[in-house]
Image (cartoon, rainbow, N blue to C red; front, side, top):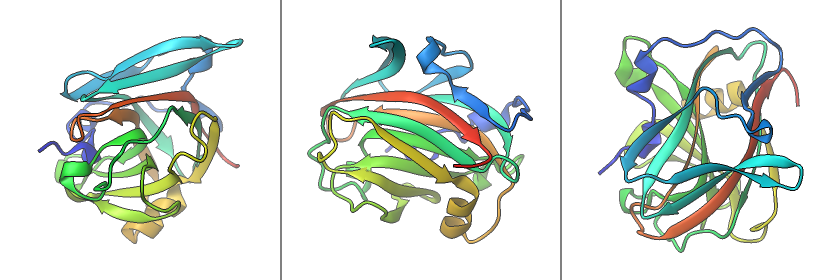
Length: 215
């Protein structure tokens, strides 16, 4: 079985790009820009493409029994820019009653924040923010593949399906709460729409992603 909860363990062993601006644009999708984003495939390829919605572009993800993601290597100081912001929309949730198990580790939309363990790659950790099918909003659990990846359900069910939802998270506080210790930097941001375990089809859209000093 694939450890999708720790999507970027191997990727983080490579060099990163240091950024110092107070507001850091990571996913500049509205400007039809995918610079810096790389593909990580586990099973097949989820289709990611920039499409135009009204005046701006968004990133559309379509999965048909597949599991691949896009990731962006960064080096962001959480002491100055702790807030991660993004928007997302789904067509509908998966019919998935087993999201906390290896057999059900599929989500119509995920945003990962990855923290490298440096040369100690086994210490790499990740927070998975997900649009859940069944879990209550705000609930957390360890990824079934590794306790080094923690899950947080920010949205749940189909109440807001078809609607854009804006998310803002204090990454530093979430890390402290989930792992019980402090963290000073982020090493990668990733997104994934995956349905390899359920064999279902899913479609989601991602808006711009950035980090900033405040809400």
